[in-house]
Image (cartoon, rainbow, N blue to C red; front, side, top):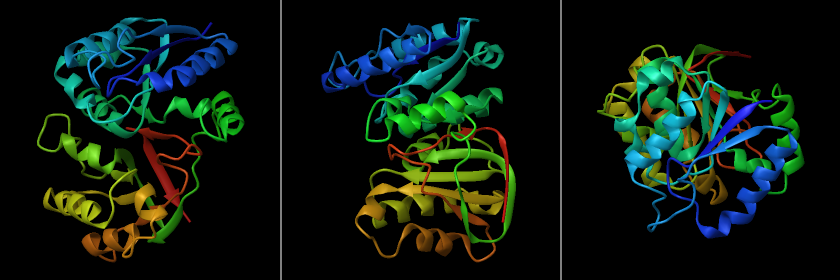
Length: 276
């Protein structure tokens, strides 16, 4: 029997998510998974499901359990980086468990890779029971091959290769200047976003430029930028990225990584080779 953990390292789930959470438990039970649940899932004090230390302790219980193979974070929001100082990196390094999460959990995924060399999965398991593509997502989740094969189109260049880091651009930049920010030399930088339009994306890209990111990486992978794309922003994200990187940076775009309920998964901390 496969053992998995459920945690919420970012904002606690609000009561309105109770039906979806119950449905997720039902679905995972139908796969005959043994489920270990964090005591910090739903909000107890405003947006908090527990202190940063308490949420970290619940996560470490999962990493310390040799039977647990995958840990699914069902949260998102703003608070995930509060847990980072309380994590035991040596235990995580030697754990059997792989961490899954998206959005604000970009901070945890990249910190785990930076501190331990372990990869993790940028994906929200709530997609399995929410939205109008539940059956598609469940098929991908159960078969896995398709889940991890998003389709990219080259915008600039014809090939790129390197270890993938990044994720949600806003949340990734929370790690800048901390021990949890990955070394970008030779990496592929994945960027996506839910909110924010031209001013926000321009300033995030300027920060990456000032960090020297575009002088170090081997290519850029762009996922969906939901607010910009829904509102038809001009210049679009591709134009903004080209402006800061120049014509020689390989850039590829996908509509299958991001916050949409149709999103596939990307592995943070694993080598990827992409070519026409």
